[in-house]
Amino acid sequence: MTFNPNADISSNRTSRRGRNTAIAGGGVGVIGLLVFLVGPLLGVDLSGFIDDPALESGSGGNISNEAAMAQCDTGADANKSTDCRMAGAQVVLDDYWSQQVKGYTPPQMTIVDGQTSTQCGTASNAVGPFYCPPEQGVYIDPTFFGVMRDRFGASADELAQLYIVGHEWGHHIQNITGTMDRYPNNGTGPESNGVRTELQADCYAGAWLGDVTTLTDDNGTPYLEPPTQTQIDDALNAAFVVGDDYIQGQSGMVNPESFTHGTSEQRQRWFTDGYNKGLGSCDAFAVPGSQL
Image (cartoon, rainbow, N blue to C red; front, side):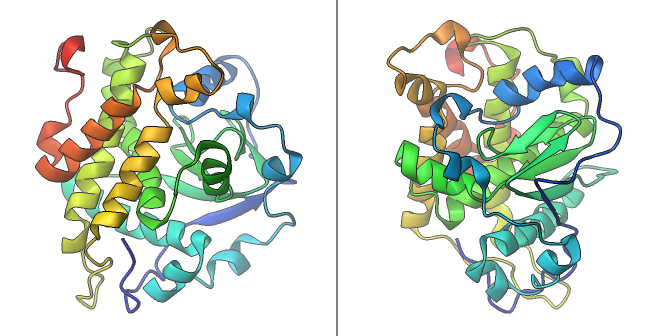
């Protein structure tokens, strides 16, 4: 799925931070406990499989927020630059969810250059994209997509990248609508709240992408062009390689009782249901475990 070259994304609020900057007000205690929540539950923790310092180091250098994002004005920019694609996704996601959730408040989207500290721990491509509840912030290091290709065999192209951003936005929706409070962390396992949380976020991402071609900028220009089957397969491939069974299988042992995200098949199915059936199909907490 590519952006319409003429689409206006200049209103993006996306910022960029590098390895030498940090969020004030971090600390330990209750916030420290969120490292567990964010790592295995609200992000894709690949740190156990990454041993190449080049992958963890990111693109290097620190670029100011203003200089990095000022160049992301149009869909053409989003098609040429992964950073601008993330900024464009932020614009379209805010447009979509503001129409779906009464009183919607947007999260802050941060492009990570190498690594940066957050109230939920260190953000880097070793941790993967994640959502930090106390900050209401989404963190993505675009070099993570290269990790997916090199270590997990994913294609990780345009639509896969949008699926991943949409998934993290889904966690923000769960946060601001009270889902996280109603269904708190209750440990791991194939029927756990953690797995249900992740599958619902996959469904939310699918619902957004299923409706996204109906969204237009202020000039009436569609943000995105209709996806090709190849692009849809690309997103499904991304959902497959972030399944618990696939990731654990890379180490030679699969333990369902330690699942936090759901199997590859489940993640593909919930994304597909959202894409084809919309938000009404996304209540992962209402179905028995056998139907997840």
